[in-house]
Length: 348
Ligand SMILES: [Zn+2]
Image (tube, rainbow, N blue to C red; front, side, top):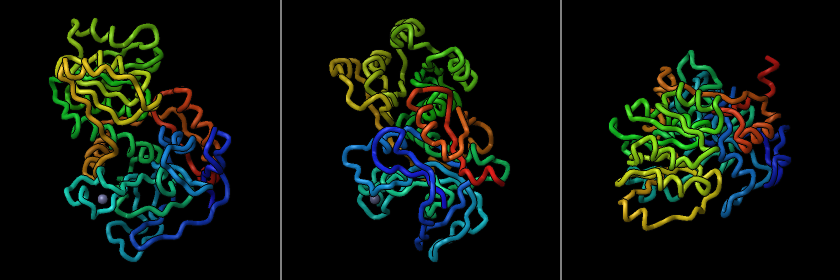
């Protein structure tokens, strides 16, 4: 089969597309005929190499994909050949203290497909059957592939961990990113007043179309100053920050007393300076979240499948041009998700 592979950790030049061995299907796995995949910032981090991450190279990346089940392992009963499925990339052990407590995303052996194990950006992918979500007829492959990771992440972050309520004001940073554009829609769906930051007129218009009440340009002034102006100096109840180093200080300064800072990523780097006085003085809460339970994933995706939420795509590329997709993410060019399709799909 053909697969995207990282020949090494490093720059975009390590991303290749070519022959790779067909996957073997474990007893609890299903073999998926991949029709589309989608990129996440995680793919960029995995490509560059993460501390403590020890991958066998070459590595097949990719955490998001959708396609048709071709074959199932001996112990699989929840999916059958011919089923339309999407991949929900988090896999837990089922037996550790946290799994037994019903907190799979806290699993001591939590693995994300494509990050800790072989990913799904290939013509065929062997995926634990538990990690497959049903995709209704009528949902296109690009949407099915692009939705799972960012919508599940944003859903757990805002709804479960952040406990957003209709009377909350919510500021979403980086509204043009995958998680950002999902967070804007979820906060709007709950009934919150939504502020969003984006760097261009076009991106701000898109954020407002998706449900932001007010989109803010962070390039010409500090966004916390704008938030203070727009909220009569009060600040917002919730900030959604997946940017990290570049924005953390301003995020804390944007919060009203008693506010919550929700974090699920750090695309600009993980070690910002923190003013601790502001956290205890204003009684702020910093809430971390990662991935989601299968129940949370299905709650979010149901609302994608029925059209409540829209998955914006900045580009759809053949998998052989995955490096270009990384460039779009790294340069923050465009709005929404980058979809990658096996080159062979274009021949059919
Ligand atoms: Zn576990």
